Length: 145
Image 1 (cartoon, rainbow, N blue to C red):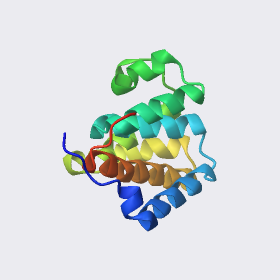
Image 2 (image 1 turned 30 degrees about the vertical axis):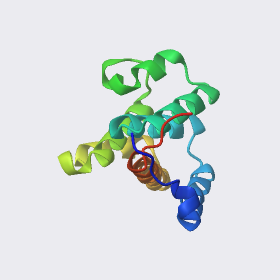
Image 3 (image 1 turned 180 degrees about the vertical axis):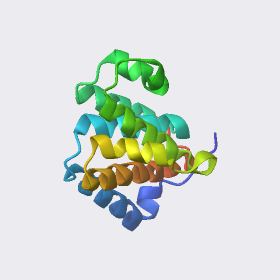
Image 4 (image 1 turned 90 degrees about the vertical axis):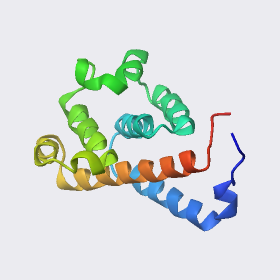
């Protein structure tokens, strides 16, 4: 693979803006473990090796079990995830694969059953943010150390 730029050094203000989004998520009230599931699932879909490694490790630190981590990519086929997590994961997949299916009304309505409006907005911010991080990771060929 060809070396690419170290984007955070090349554009420190862009990196600072991304970190600002992460600070907003820390203060959002969403559970840390849920945020890590969101980040990991989007990173799996986007094929970001750096982010998959980072967020799998962070999820473990947040208390995730190996069974849940190992089956996250097939979460619909397991019983490991709560209805709240399932609603969030469906939203992650829809917004990460936006061109394929859009944001289906049924998935949005499922969110309403498990999340307050502020949480839905912050959940959507979390999805948008990890998708942006993934574009930097994949675009600049970042790999785990």
